[in-house]
Image (tube, rainbow, N blue to C red; front, side, top):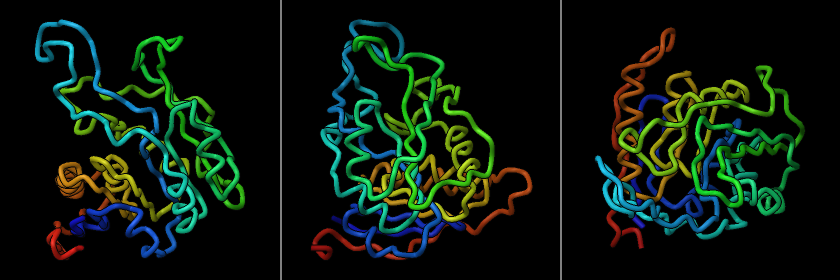
Length: 250
């Protein structure tokens, strides 16, 4: 697939499959904080007839999640090769599957309690997601937290860059709790983890294989670097490092 790399302030964004490049990024990341495919075969929503911006019964405002059919057991192991702390988002049914593929023990499970349910009854309508924390040698968080985090979702589809986008405030809370400086996200999506890092002055490396999501992440990171939070010094504008056409990439 094509390879492209952007440096935006203290963020490094890579357009590629993480399975092809993560092993070469052995730069001593303090933590991997990532929201990979959940392995739940997430099909297009069927919501029936409705009025307003979203008309009809099909999901026409975001593409189908055809990539979310299975969790590759190689993903957790790859993450363990580049860091000693991993924060991994997932769906409750997949905890044992993910944990079995990790090289490190499970240290904590954080329940993200949303302000509304996000799916049909199965047998109850879910209003939570999980964050599993794995580490090689225990955890020493930087802030006190409990195991349930009440955090609103992004309010409407109109404001979302990605079907499974996480609120930046949630990612900032997680990063503050982890308390590390160099963060890697091998499944960057639209870049919410990177935006949170930019607002907090943290170093970020993100990998994304979808060109559309990668471009969105670049725009969001550039904007975040130009409009940092108070006490965070602005970073340099984006610059393209390299671009290889698909024919050249093999």
